[in-house]
Length: 144
Image (cartoon, rainbow, N blue to C red):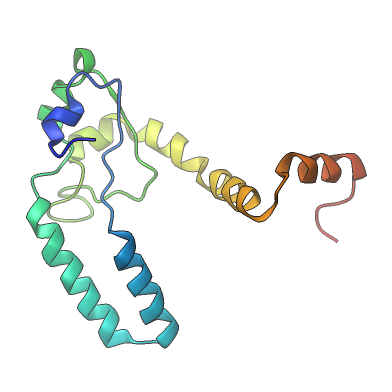
C-alpha cells in the first residue's frame, strides 16, 4: 500500500484506480437514508466533495499509464467511472485512458451482478458449495 499514485502505477501490470469514501461515510449515509434526512444527506455530500477536492490530482491519465510495465498495463474499473470532461469536469480517469480501455472495463463491469450474488451467497450460508449442489441436483425451476 502506497500513498502516491506514481509509485502505485510504477511497473504495474494492472491498475484499478477507484475513488471511494471511507466506511464511516457509508455508515453515516445509511443512517441518514433510514431517517429520510435529505438535508443531512446534502451536508454529507458537501463534506465528501470538499474532501475529494484534496485529491483532484489523483486522476488516472496517460502520464501515469506510461509509468506502468512497458507503459501498457490494463486499466480496470467496476463502473460507473467519473470521466474527466465527459461525466464531470475533473474525474478519476481521463477521457483518453477510459476510451482506450472502454471495452475491457465494460466486460469487467458485466460481471458485477454475479460477483455481488456470490458475495451474498458466501455471506449468508456456511457451506455455499452444498447449497449450490443441492439446487443443481434438485433440478427445480428457479422461478416458482
